[in-house]
Image 1 (cartoon, rainbow, N blue to C red):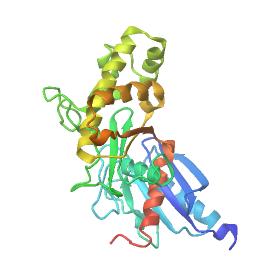
Image 2: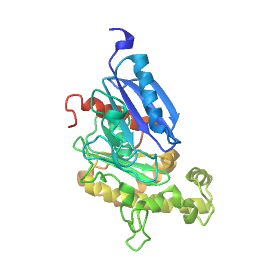
Image 3: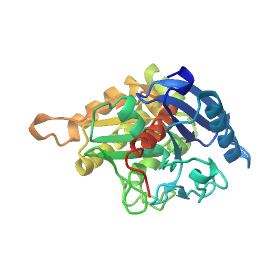
Image 4: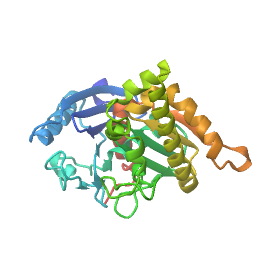
Length: 302
């Protein structure tokens, strides 16, 4: 078998600003990566062009998977609900759009990222994993007993929309006093009375020991720990993976967060949940999408 005919998978991650397309060997090793902007009305045609180019270079793929923001349709063929972003995404049947001879599975991007991390990232071999993405907002995904949780409408894993303060203001989905509003970057300006608008700058000042920064960070870590311990009690993970821009603070975040969890985590027989940061970066969703296509080769979606 020639190199051009070596079996491979394609994973596509549709981000708010970029389209990431990976060609991956069956073991998950990366063969080629393509990136394009996702702006403009022709973004879907751009995806088709990137996939067609990989097929021209490497031959037909074993399967293609799509990771995208929003709630996936119960059939797994399209995104059913994602208002305001990527016009035309809702209801787009990717199997037809990409002219694929096999069904193209579609996953929520956070769920795909978790699947990628379990396959080739920071949670290899784990069956009970909680992913929490800390960025502009707070997102996430849950794997229980080796299965991604999707729920009745696909909302499972939206961990940012749990309540920390029942008397707090509603967040974007009407959850009062949410984890997302307590720690997400989008509220940092309000939480710091206009002093900070970027968590990276805040983390820098925490390392420098500036009192205002340390106070804000301490409160953020406390709120995050409260949210995580609630989620631990619900889904009982082996490991919590932290991703997103805020997680790039590394030990500045992980050390105080671990200390905060020491105070509040329920630990039967002294066993605690491991904390780790994601390993695959901004292509974890593409890895997960390809993995979903691989898993469905033997059990295709109807």
